[in-house]
Image (cartoon, rainbow, N blue to C red; front, side, top):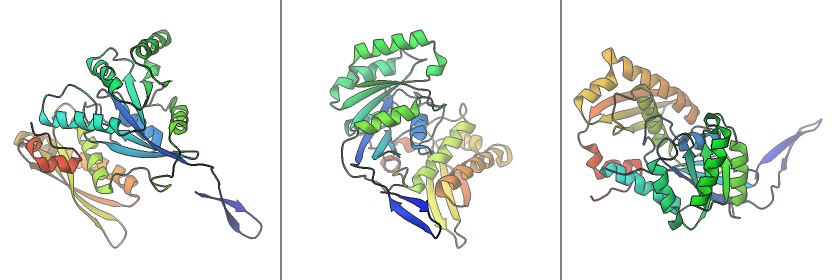
Length: 317
């Protein structure tokens, strides 16, 4: 419940708002890499809770964003992009994505309309029948395709699998997002809210801060740095003035990668830090002092401890 304030001549009197029966549930967003899942989650929530990058497979573990729509609380699960895994980290990410879908109340398949048909989306469609939950189809980036082709694509995909609803959106611009959130809210089961009203993510700030820095890392070095680089928040200390001192380490696998991240005279790492600090300060709602370090950790993608840090299950093979 929340309070609304009604002004009188003497004082402001809080009046409780009765929303009626509450609803709460999970919506898992699945799709091929770079379909726009993280962008959509951020739009649905109204704040950055998941990092966005044009680099494929940026989201590694499930990120949860929490949105309110009337009497409903919707927990959106942004899963890693589903693709054909070749390495251990890839397998862990794909397993994590399907696990998120299996645990949700509603599964939402996001398709980038410009890329269909693509192998990843076709493979996901072939497995959707294994999931018993209600499913919806979300066609993204509709502002970049001819209207006639869009309708034909919607018919084709619904013929391949039965969806309860089909939505057409442009996540980056927010087109169609309010209607999508409203419809998903109505599909949530009756029950109490799981999170406080003002909470927008269940991720600890330390983890979210690391993800923000990783986003800025990929933005700055998209073509120069392999995606198998990671960021860990080593220290988060609240200072007497209420600001936060944060130390983070960027781990790469080779010395030449470390030099790329640092840049000439440290200019690249400074630029990454300045950009990350602004977003972390917004998420933490306080002034932030961010200190970044770059270290080489060879074969970190074969270290079970790193998978636990990312919230992934370590594949044995």
